[in-house]
Each structure stands twice: as structure tokens, then as C-alpha cells.
Image (cartoon, rainbow, N blue to C red; front, side, top):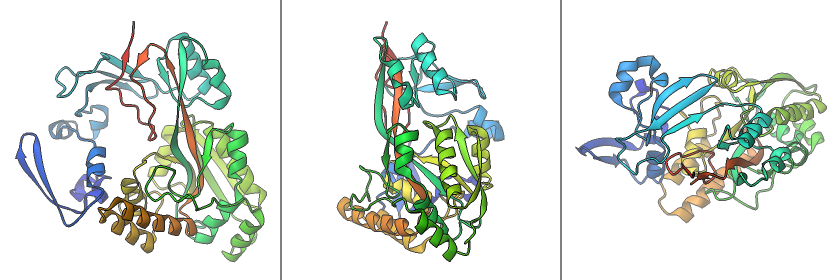
Length: 382
């Protein structure tokens, strides 16, 4: 919570007024009032050894010491991350002794690795390759997963104008992208939540595809002849992400905009976003818990890279998280969603159908809606 720590979770912990250590495994937290998000925030918190952080300094990302069932062995950027079972773990002992994670941007290469046995689990299987995994030794696992969005940096012109952000929501035919680029593997979003999240309103309909309305709003915002901008997207991070980025740019240019695509590998993409150099970009929202997702995204101290500010939204989020009654909290978050719909911080796209491929010998894997892979329950049969 110390500002000098620059912890991205700090904004979610502001209601905590004191922390007291009671014994080696117990702490007491006091809040300044009811705070519905406290347990989800604590569950989502990532802890590291203070002594390890102090010893490693700025190199701590390459020498992490955490609290999980596995401990860090090796990280070769762009090649592999290796973990091994922690024999001193406080909970159930992990069943796998060693796990290697490998970044493989090309989906077809991942599928080949799975089929040949070089990989036991792969993510991001695109629809056109699913049939290749239908065999006795490999299978598919699917779940309605992460929300794909285009985030506008509201601190940069022309995206500081709500009418421009609305115009781009009208200008992109999301249904066409889901059908032809995603092969149907997507669920249209109308707002900043998906089914199953608090605040989701089934009566809120997605922006219709209306290029003429988009042009009208651009003219009202002072851009009758369009504008120039660079659109950033990752390559190999999400299902068909490069093709999705190209489709979005193509549709925006159809209404007279002059958008240049910049689709690069994930690390370079993230660096540009974090430095707030990007004007607008394709990225996923992975947190399915509204109590965390809303303040993390729309309150000061949250996702600074989008620089979105709306007092009504902020007030509703604060009121929602001060409301312990779940049904009442849902109503408040629905109100926030309506404001976000009218003053869109994003170009609302779709919830991606996350598709994994796994070898039949891998046991204990369940796909999650937040795209996390939890290795603790995993095991392999002979």
C-alpha cells in the first residue's frame, strides 16, 4: 500500500486502514467501512518474499520467490520458463516434479507440438485447427473466456472525445469478425461485462454496425475528414489476433480514417502500452470478478494506460463495492455498465472461446474463464 512500492493492487486496497500481525499465519485487516471486494482482492494478490525482493532489487523479476507449490528454476526470455516442485510447500504436494512453459506464437506449430508429444498442453487453438486434435491421444477443452476489446488511450487525441469512441463502436462490424475471422468462436459483447459477471445486463444490446452514424459522430467531434492514427495489436497472444487487428483497421479505413496497423510480438506490444505510447490497441480483459475488474480498470491508480475518467462511473463503482448485498451490488454495477455503454472506454468486441489442446495423459486440467492455468492439480498418467 506504500506509494513508493508502486503496487498496481494499491488502488484496490485503499479502504484498508490498518494491518496487524497476530501470529505467524494470521493477520487482521481493518477497513474504513463495508468493502465487498476485499476477499477477491486478497485472493488475487501475488505475494513474494520481502528478503528476496530486497536482495535481488530490480532483477527480482528474473529471480522470483513466491508462495506456490512450484518454485522458479530458469527463465530464458523467448524460449522457456522452468519450474520445479517445492518440497516445502505448505499445502498439498504438487504431483508434477517439473514444468516447462514455452512461448510458441504460431498456432500451427503449437498443434504439431501437441500431436507429436512435444507438448502436453497448448492454448489458443484456432477454429480452423481444431479438427487436427481429434485423435485418441489428444483432446480439446473449451470455455467462454477472456473478453477481447480495443482500448482507447483517452489522454491522446482524438480519443479524448467520447463521440470518437462511440463512432468507432459503430464503425466496426464485430459480428462479421466473429463469423469470418474467428470462425464463430466468439460471443458478442455489449459492454464491459460478460454473462456470469455482476453488472451484466442481457437487455443491453451491442452497438449496431452503422458506418453512417460513425461518420456523423466524427463530424460532430470535429473530424469530418477523419484522422490519422496507429493501431497496435499483438501477434500470437490471442486466437487469430493478427487477423482480428487487420480486420478492425480495414473496417475503420472504410469510413475515411487513415489507420496504420502495428502488429508485433507480445513483449514489444506490452512495452508500448505500458509506456502509454499507444493510441488504441487490441488487448484482453481477463478478470471475471466485477468487484476487481471495474476499479482496476476505471478508477485512478488502475489501468493508467487507458486514462479513462468518468466521475459517475467512479462513484457507482465505489458505491457498489461498499454494498455487501450481492443483488443490490449487481444493480449498481448495471448502472455503471449503462454509463460505460454511453461513454465507451473501449471498442466492445467479443468474449473469446478459449480452446486448449491436451494430451490424454494429462490429468486435472480444467479451463478457466480468466485464462489462468493453475498447475497444482495437474498430473500425468503412465
